Amino acid sequence: MATITVIIIHQPYLQSYASLPLPTIFLHRMKVTEHIANAQGKTLFSFEVLPPLKGKTIETLYNHLDPLMEFKPSWINVTYHRAETMFKKRADGSFDKVEVRKRPGTVGICAAIRNHYNVDTVPHLICGGFSKQETENALIDLNFLGIDNVLVLRGDAEKNEPNFVPHKDGHSYASELLQQVVNLNHGIYLEDDIQSGGKTKFCIGVAGYPEKHFEAPNLEIDMKYLKAKVEGGADYIMTQMFFDNKKFFHFVKTCRANGIEVPIIPGLKPLTTKKQLSVLPRIFHVDLPTELSLEVMKCKSDEEVEQVGTEWLLQQSRELKEFGVPVLHYYTLGKPRVIQNVVKELV
Ligand code: FAD
View 1 (cartoon, rainbow, N blue to C red):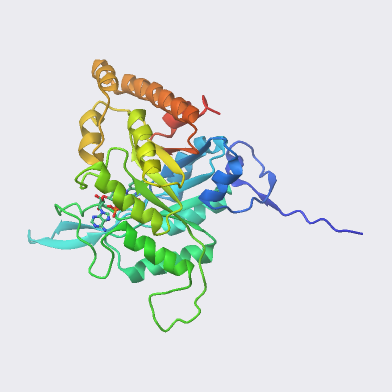
View 2: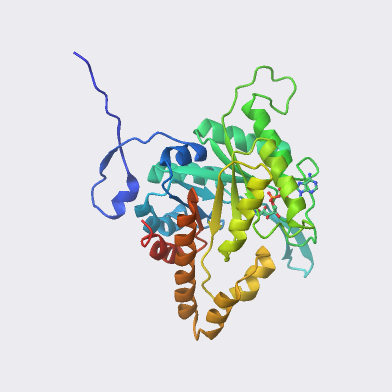
């Protein structure tokens, strides 16, 4: 007689809605590209979170994610953060220069989220502030944990520096970090004496900028480097936030015209405060459309701005879905309720 084995684990995120853990069939871990291929044209959802500030518990992150998990995101991205140089005052009035990594733990958080919610996770990895050895160790940890996705980025300049300065034993561009991950996928480690090293199988994402990266002289040159990342082995592109879909459509068209065929995932963020009218262009180098800006300027409170921002994000999302994007990726940054209000209209 044939024996059927059913693997049952409990799905802890359902515990917030029920007093007893509910059994569920264990889901197969998938790469971002596998999720997209399996969706067969259906638009997926994914969310991005930041690691909690050092000293905060993982529960703060779960409280943030709980309201979003009902939408069954295909995966959760977790950002990566370098140490910052700070000056701490001594008793004698002089200052100590200290390096503080305020948001550590991306690798561990990805494993924790995966165990807690039974969902795939995509850790970000950055060049800035990390040596190649530290990066290799992080990749080995991820591999041991069974996490086969990474989004590779350069990172920005350190807070106190005007320009990006690479770590002395690190990478200068995301393309170099990408090469390191590709090498590991081929079993090539930094130490020459590791022969026939175990091969990782990372699915690799890279960043793209519908309004160009702020340091690039123009979109064409930026596109040239983006194409190099794809030719170097990137499996998909995830974009910087944008508020004008026309910019995204133009970006996709330009990518395709340049022979970039990998999936392009739009990154979306809600506008929720009046201050963001100047903060977002300054920090993220994105334009805010006139129509949206004028609506926000009319608002008397941030609650009103949040309403305008929610409606705008919903319209943007509907149009992108119609356009046929594979995934709607939301930067949740402290605003899970807004994302919840948008996504519930789309499912
Ligand atoms: P790169 O691809 O290296 O490009 C940087 C600049 O150099 C561009 O202007 C490009 O045109 C140019 N360039 C590229 N290659 C070359 C070359 N060979 N020669 C000369 N010029 C070149 N930051 C974090 O710190 N942590 C995060 O978790 C994080 N997540 C992000 C997620 C997304 C989806 C996005 C869009 C950005 C994220 N960032 C994050 C910010 C990102 O690190 C910055 O935007 C950074 O300034 C550029 O990263 P990149 O990977 O696009 O860099």
